Image (cartoon, rainbow, N blue to C red; front, side, top):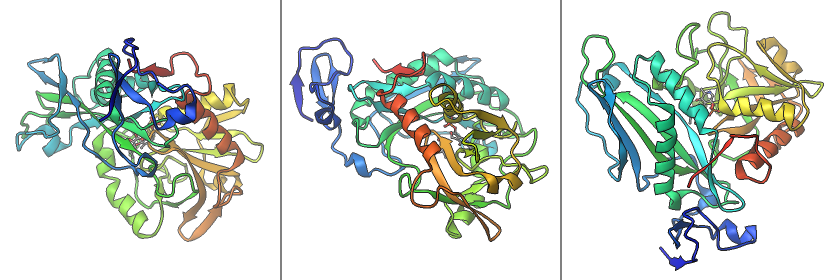
Length: 376
Ligand code: PLP
Ligand code: COI
């Protein structure tokens, strides 16, 4: 860890280098005038996997109240064998990212929306929601404490932030737990899909992800547990992901296991599937805003029949982990739907959306008010 004083005691994360190319691999963390170098990691070759970082946040809920919470270096959790999370999967989580901007600030993208969604997810599983303003402060604390792990600007990597909450006290009859933990860990990540932004091939799944009036609209761990067999089946058959149809009629496009889906129609409009059983993706909601207000596209948010999909020109997956990942092909029980954008590169509209969204996240395109949360 190399340390230099730069005389800047503002407490922010300021760069010693004015030009952004130097900045890309030289940003340090300013700790009261001391520059702490980033971790010695091959940032550009990270994949989407877990690395133990320095600090995580934990708060406990007991006797009807959350304690004040704080950071810990202990990455292990000791639980009752009968904890609610272990017996009845009482857990919810979130996913967001921290980035280093072109001018070397550390920022998060719309964390208030994650705080709100986690509040809703917790309430739906009869868990005591963690207050939104405390969620934001906890994100700030963990990212700040792990600033040496935030990938440098230009590396293509980011710091994935995983807030989660679970029932920790014993339950034996089916019931909510009495005690809970709210935690956040962070891990530096590269692209979610192998191959980065190369177009993906999806399969239409024979399994369902979410029931009507079920839990598809919240970020509950149980939704992901039940998708594991479907995703492993798809991988074994050589597909990157599943596209799930609505469970009731199997005629409408829902989403994939870890991302919402977007399409571009023959007129260049953005078509966004709408359903009460898909996760309200923050990336998707941001993309629709960017499409309308930055790119002047028409956005058509509605139920999308699977039978319409062959008419679309481009397709993409969107989410925090997936960012915007282009889809080249969908395999429907052996019948291939190939998008005009092909298997080599992103289609032109998806590319514009990708460049604008990531430009906003990285700080070189001006963000709408309130989208960027600086870690200070
Ligand atoms: N859909 C599912 C099932 C997800 O797991 C995710 C990831 O969070 C998304 C969509 C995308 O949501 P967001 O853009 O808020 O990350
Ligand atoms: C995210 O994008 O944050 C998610 O939680 C999706 C998950 C599949 C990694």
